[in-house]
Length: 246
Image (cartoon, rainbow, N blue to C red; front, side):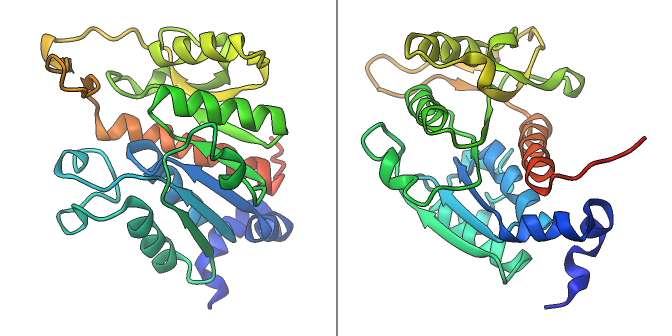
């Protein structure tokens, strides 16, 4: 394969930096609106080994914000669609897929191959907290996405530690659970938005009585994409160990 594929990344990160990315193993958990864009950037950075974790299939409601959701991918497993796209971007990337829903009982199996970095893009509270606690206790490097839904201002998106987030309902719930589990919140790095949204009545669709469906929250393709790209950027800079001088 031509070296030109990642030439511009190498120009910025250097030969050693790009080689570190080629040797790295990154796991992405959740391949939806945020995780899909994180995957896109990581595949295009030259990461040599990607482990993709998701249990879900694409449906029509995903198309407004998920880069892998197309008319042609409706009904297909997200992991399988993602693997095909990665191989189209970088045929030399080793791709593993795990079609599972994360829970405390399967985390040891999911992370049997210890990655260099994990991207958490899960939108389920219980699964997210279980994953973050496991990664923290096992001292595996990670970065987590907090809530991108209901947000509209890109300027309010930032990287922080979980103990310093504000105006994010998901971060508040995660913080509460992880604190009860003894996790040091200052060691949980995350992408979040400090925006205090002003919501129209249509922004949140409450579940019908006894139907078991979670609340559906409005979201923009721009904001979820930015969340994912910031996650990926953090991983690329950390793994490449690139140093930039003013």
